[in-house]
Each structure stands twice: as C-alpha cells, then as structure tokens.
Amino acid sequence: CEIVISSFDSDFFQLINEKVFVLRYRGKNTIICTPEYIFEKYGVFPKQFADFKALGSGAEAILALDNAKVTYVNGKYVYVRDNSDGMCFYNQTATAEATNKWQLGGKVKGKVSIYNGLTQMTITDASAMTHTDGEEYQPVAIASTEAASHIADLVKLTDEITVFADGTKFYTSEDKSLQIYDSFKLNYTIAAGDKITGLTGVVVPYNTQIEIAPTVSPVTASVGALKADAD
Image (cartoon, rainbow, N blue to C red; front, side, top):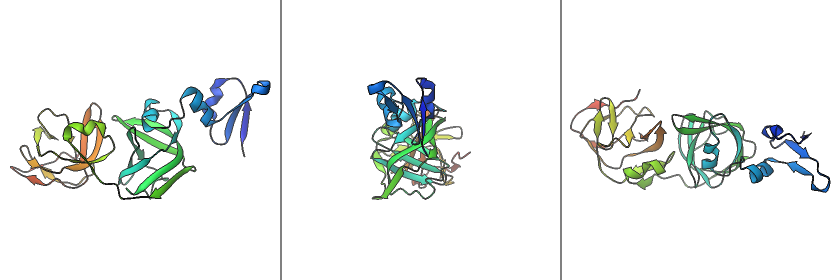
C-alpha cells in the first residue's frame, strides 16, 4: 500500500518514506517527492554518518549505508563506521545478530539521539538494509593523539602510555586528552604510573572528553593496584 499526498505544504515532507510520497502538481512539471528527491533538494536524506549526526537529537531521517562496517559489538551496542564518521546502533532488533564481520548496505530509517556526545541511531525501519559477511574487523593502529578522529572505531594504540590518575579517573597522559574507561565491564585493574603497550578498545566521546573503552584487559607493567573506574 502506498500513500500519495497532494499538497504544496512542505510540512508534509516529514511524512515521506518508502511508502508515503508528496505530489506537487504543476502540469508538465509535476513532481512526486520521494526520500531521494528530498535529499537532493534539501540535504535531509543523509548519505553519510556525519550528515546524519548534523541533523541533531530527535530528528528522523533515512540513512544510506555506504561502505559502512561494524567495528565492534557489545550486547545492545553496535559500533559502526563509514568513510566520514562513526556512530552506534543502540538496542536494535535489526542488528541483534550483528558481528564485526558485517558490512552494511542499503538504507535504514531511524531517529537521531546524542548520548554524551556519541551519535546513536534508533532504527525504525531496516527493511531496506542489507549486510554481507566480510573479513573480521581488525583494530586500527593509531597514536593516542589521533583518537578523536576515530569515533566508534576499534583501535590499537601504537605508543606506550604511562597511566595518569586524577582521583578515580585514568588517562593515557597527564594532559587528560584521552580517558581510559571500563565501559564494557572487564573489571581490570590499573594504577597511576602503569606502563601499557598495545591498548586496544573502542573510541567514544563523553561530553567534551574522548575515551577509549578497552575491549581486552590492558597488559600493564604495574606499580600498584587500583581498580579502574567502571561506574
């Protein structure tokens, strides 16, 4: 069943989806407004994650999945990146079976939410989304100073870090530019002054802070034993 709304009122554009269209009758220049038309004319059918993020919390849009890869899965959190940015599909039935071998195609419709700076998508229609199994996603080797450019990415830090502590919070350096946070409840222990090599985890924003959430317990040369903050 398809619905065609005949109107020149642009407020009806918010109703457009794969089965609802707006007809603008102009004789020979009559236009049927589809999701693709709305994107081409107004830029609200995002083709990249960065565009979707820019719509702001509460917006709903159709997101085309172009070279999108699942980087890491942890329960209801499915971290995904394309060539422009990273985001999280949160608590999704559509991605309940997702693995870090998935490569996504097609398109999905969903709502934007921003959680502590991380763009999340609540999928409302995944009927046009496809996935294929590719190679297992491998951690991207980066320096700790590059973390902000790898949101929702699985990374492996190439530099040896010396843990800096500020109360119960732990960082990769004294400038506190990258926090180490036990989001995935690995219950590891680290302490101020510990040396860590090959720290591997998912990079996420937390308000104005950038965090790395380890996906494997850090291997340390310990000088103490304080439990990592995992509240």
